[in-house]
Length: 228
Ligand code: DC
Image 1 (cartoon, rainbow, N blue to C red):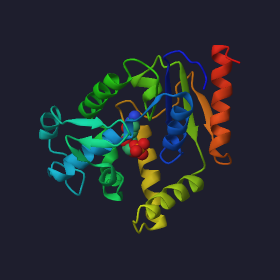
Image 2: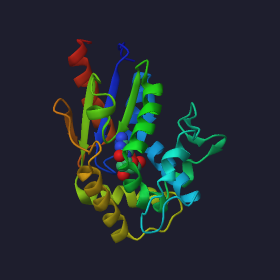
Image 3: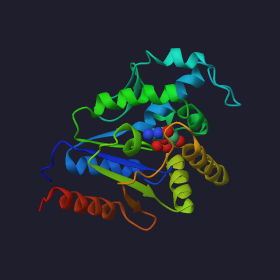
Image 4: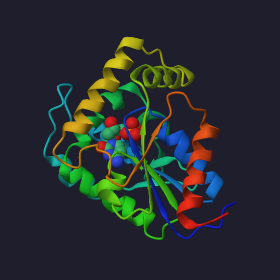
């Protein structure tokens, strides 16, 4: 294992570019903690849906701001997402949550709430965090920033396979539509839109295996910290 200082590795990019698989494996290889910021936005969305604070037409009740302040969101040591004692890992990955997470995550008060949690978890470094605005807004001083991209087809296929593996019955065209919609909202919203940080390294993994991706990052980190 590389002998690294207590750094933060920020992994941002479009939906279904394989950020979480990459970030998880990097964390494992480096002995760091993996943190999935999208899981927190998804958990807030699930909470809003279950509390009927968001309508089918994406109308959000302003009471959500007050209601989330004490929401006991947390990650377990094995990276599962909990609201209090309830593990919501499966529910937050459903199409239902995916279809409403972008309007919820566009709200500044939701972003502030999630950012506070992420800062608690990332306070001591040695984390790999994935999301949309980690390198630009949450941890703009992260020592290593990666911006991931992949072709639309590759991304839709990955998302589709993921949902099938979970026992869902997705319609491929709907998966494509959801990815495109999320890309659009995520990169056009006013509050910390998805964009590449000026000092981020771009990783297009359309034609790469995950071990090639990790080897690429290792090389980059070794170069930056002069580690052989
Ligand atoms: O990474 P993901 O697909 O699980 O993220 C779900 C949604 O959360 C995504 O559509 C946008 C939002 N998100 C965000 O706005 N900022 C982040 N740092 C992470 C996710």
